[in-house]
Length: 487
Figure 1 (cartoon, rainbow, N blue to C red):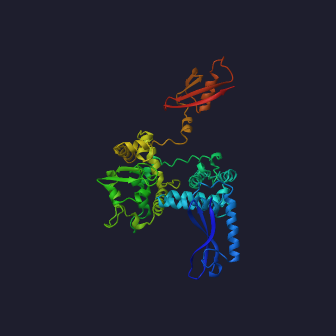
Figure 2 (cartoon, rainbow, N blue to C red):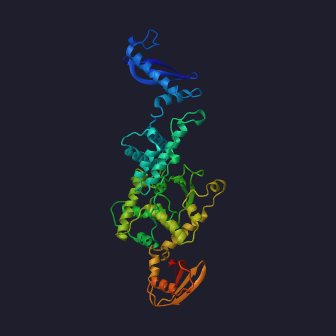
């Protein structure tokens, strides 16, 4: 059972005393500060009791309220901190916004500054929807959260990302404030009943091989400045692309100790705090980009940084923004409709590695330093050379060939554009059995082939039937599959 008593602790310089409520539970005490103050006349001679009438009455009422609150729940095994938390905040008084901001501050302290920004925006969205600057845990009901998530339905990623971030903060608070074994439940959990929508599938950011070649073939405009935007953007894009799509933040924070004997050693900052192997990876710097790589090495002997990026830009965000600005200027010189960011080159590396160099998805994940095979990374001495060899193949494919593995989005349309001189073979299948075949020229589109093929079906073909159709352009060595319902 907790006990309460109004007390003063020490006299201020102005001669006044702040009034506290002392909370005692299981022989441990904590003090709750109040807004009231008294002078020497408001205290008993031994200064143990409050005798000022108004303050004594108000503290008495406050203490009575505390007892009424605690009488609703068994607090026998609570600590004094749990008692204070409960009576100060109560089931309806815990501030989610305050807790969320402290949670975000802890993320920043752990080095998750970039990730913390997503949490800040999620909190801002929630507060804006609630119509104020503070959201209480009691407001986070199934109905409220469902309406908030519904308000994000027109966004591509926020409808998924923001609710997940808020849920993570909420779960952390539940672990801190609640103790189910002792019946302490300051915060309810509405999330098991809530469905978080999936984010929209993003457009592929990969750049075609031919556009990559054109991008890197541009000679940046001459400038009296050292490494102007165009040069910086193109050079960093080249370094990133030729080093397995490494992120700009990992280049910006690279230290001199990370580069020796031609190998760049790094921990991917995006995931190093979340992975047991600290997202460690090694990349051999290809000879092909060594002059560009060395161009940006720091000349300051006292600087710990490998590159001189920090000498001209103060944050990784400003560095990334300047790089992307330079990339955009190069893109405009290639084509008015060509747009790319530094991250596009990471996507391009992965796409070319698979479609142009025959790499498996596992090989690509490994080279991109993704978190696949987490436990294998812990128990195995890693050989990074397969990623280096794959990286060399990608470089060779782009800079030393004119092949183009890009499969245009209208590949099906290009197949359907046929000449009447092409030899076309059409085959019709029902339940896996080939029931009709035609082979002829004179067709100018797919529908003509399908119409003739369906007309050639046996007379006893049941209707309705689903007919699977294989059409091959024997001259172009192209094949497409279709299905029709025979009525």
